[in-house]
Length: 169
Image (tube, rainbow, N blue to C red; front, side, top):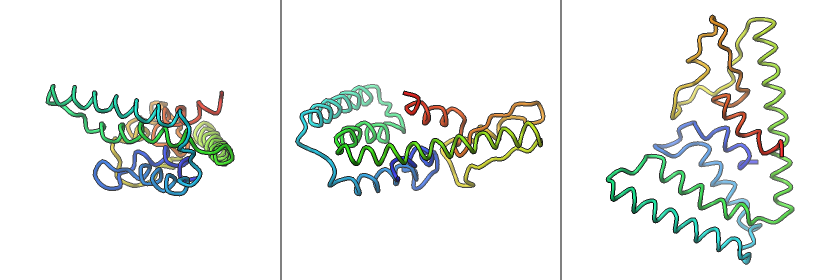
């Protein structure tokens, strides 16, 4: 459950560059640790090739004297993908079940937001009032000019689309 909720909370600041979504990923990693099959060749191939890619990227960035702020977070997520792809099939089925439920709930909320806006002219913002890494796209739009962008429980409508896309395939 923590892993499937992480993308929703990844834009909310926890400490420094560490988000609430990152914390949820770490919790899920701890929970799933005993369900990971480290004997798969795929795990080692992906893990070490990703580590090499990150090392080369880091060297290129240090030569140019510019290391992006998001480099550490991106490196972290690239490295743990191999771990999540190595979990047992039963654990994957559980993750998929939670993911489908969250997609369904977010879709219902999105439909409710549209109905409230287009029928009752009420804009329902369900984002949390916490500090974020970027501005709230919903607040940047001028609702009076008809610029309505429903995002369900996500910070930005495109985040909803990115979260939902894997379910379509």
